[in-house]
Image (cartoon, rainbow, N blue to C red; front, side, top):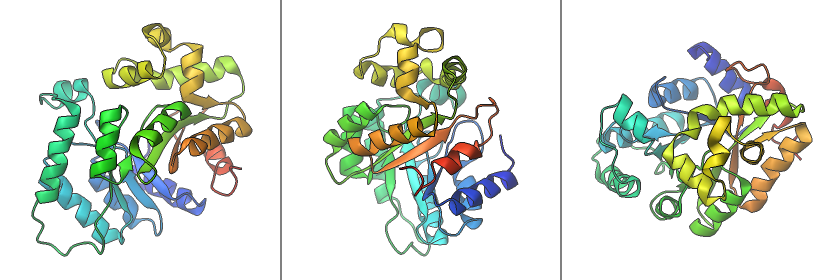
Length: 280
């Protein structure tokens, strides 16, 4: 974990390496819009994107106001990623009722569109993308927003998503990367990272659509599952996985480094190696 000052320094370093966007999450940590405002104020060109802001955390009018405020303040450098999160987070942590994901998201987007906003508007309508895995949410993302931000998937899923959404939608896929060539060490670290996701229904359903079975999710994930979802190895292996997503139709690949030390801090070695212009 990073302090606010360290996060700002990391964003500045990411910007200096030539990356175009810095994705930040929302779970049980910092408020995503407050954190985005801080990072946008500390950078000059970098897009700050929420990956993702939970629609159950605030009403649609509040989200629309935050999006327009950040877009106007930053000169259009804010990208709003929205998602329905997961039942344990929504019901267990926030105390809400987790309803039909697609219908709930559709209604939320409609309320955002209708929300009044009396402050000075941004120069252009700010973009939104959706956390989308299945075909129905991907279709909603393509028709009602700029596109999708699939998380914890494979290049095969990227190809399916592109086919589902058509040629024009943004497809901003996440890919975990680990600069570790020892198979046992790499898979162990990958399993530690995957652990919090393996029990979540939305992810499991998507992985099953990709051909995995319940047995692939046992004991931290099978080798086949880990190797398909987490890119580990030397730099060339990681570059190949990023390229596979782009070749499959991704507009943008959001890399999420796993630090070989096991610590929750950036791995600057891999970020430097995969920086734009160096990733082959």
